[in-house]
Image (cartoon, rainbow, N blue to C red; front, side):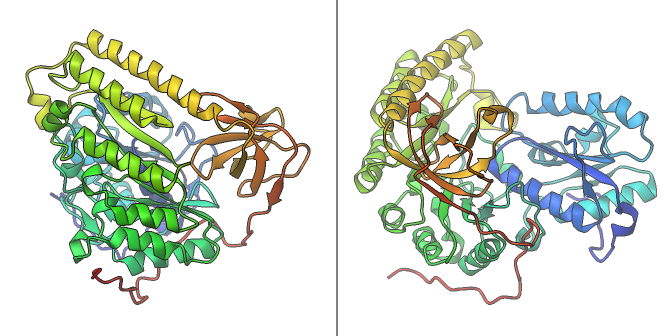
Amino acid sequence: MSSASHDLTETPATAAAGRTYAIRTYGCQMNVHDSERLSGLLEAAGYVRAADQSGQDADLVVFNTCAVRENADNRLYGNLSHLVPVKNARPGMQIAVGGCLAQKDQQEVLRKAPNVDVVFGTHNLASLPVLLERARHNAQAQVEIVESLQNFPSDLPSRRDSAFSAWVSVSVGCDNTCTFCIVPSLRGKETDRRPGEVLAEIEALVADGVSEITLLGQNVNSYGRSFGDRFAFGKLLRACGSIDGLERVRFTSPHPRDFTTDVIEAMAETPNVCPQLHMPLQSGSDTVLRAMRRSYRRDRYLQIIDEVRAAMPDAAITTDIIVGFPAETEADFEQTLDVVRRARFTSAFTFQYSPRPGTPAAAMTEQIPKAVVQQRYDRLITLQDEISWETNKQLVGREVEVLVSTGPGKKDNANGRVSGRARDGRLVHVEVGGNDIQSGDVVRSRVSYAAPHHLVADGALLQHRRARRVTAPATATVDAGRPLLSIGPRP
């Protein structure tokens, strides 16, 4: 559906020149990456990033929304209502709503929040500057939603939050039909980028000073299906290993159904692919997995864990778990706890089930009482925290390499520490001892203390390596005219 067509040759830069913007992002890493693209588009159109990203002082506030959690609607409309007096006091201020909730609600956004100027869908990122100018010129709200991806937005400018880490999408959309998830109906069927296009973007990012990239997809393991190469993701990881200057490669999220041995081998044999795996479990009960329409079972999931640890003994494995799915019994929940004990996850993103309108699970009759869900959730958190702490304590005394993301002087680092991620993804606070450490630098130290959710390395630095500095801004585009590298079907 699209209530407005547009000509992308329009140039709203003159009208936007000097206007400030703020983007408020909710949801997954895909939304974070989309917000970086929106920032790049707005700055290319003449907007300037506001110092305060709360939106209170910006000429434009963009909400990039999520529709996965039950309270997503309440959060959005509550935040929009708070901006009513702000907008009334600032003639010319604009508000735009995009992302999954905009794709889902469409015209409903304007009905509930008439102070919104633009509503755009998950496939309409490039339209935003033109829609804003049209709304301003016509003094009328603009809505543009298309139901499926027309062109992969790889050529959009991007303003990254980090000069040294970047997201790179390998696909958009999802072909799975999990009964609790609304994402496939909002982001569409899976569409894969050609490997050469992905690698071209990575090379451009590395030339711009990036040393760490995270490959993004709703299901990265099924990457290559659309162009007939079921081994494409493993080969893409290996190809990343040949890019000079690329020090760290991560990816999220794989689906256990499609996890294959060649990907494990590529992870273990490619030096810059980090020993880290985030693989959603959702439930440890085969009965619940069946009701969720998750096409794997607990034994297969644990087998993958064993294979990963056999190839990479020090790999940090994290997961997603949903508590209180409809009809989940106490016995079902105990099976989830059993898998958690056996898998020994480094950490887990845990969620209390909430029904999303439009999903099959929302219509299931045996919804679990809130008090029961909360009690189970608390037990899961307690168990996972114990395991996380135990596994982190095993690292005390070991060397750790940290890519620094936060320098001294921040609230959490007033004691002279810097923060960053180890190669396995753990958060580490490192004492700098008077050394001039900047974001993007790599330091090596020894772990002196372990907490459930972070490590501390206090002591003399064992190594300090300066980040590559480039003069170009933290933006990247891909040359759409570059020939695509062919990674053909594996024999």
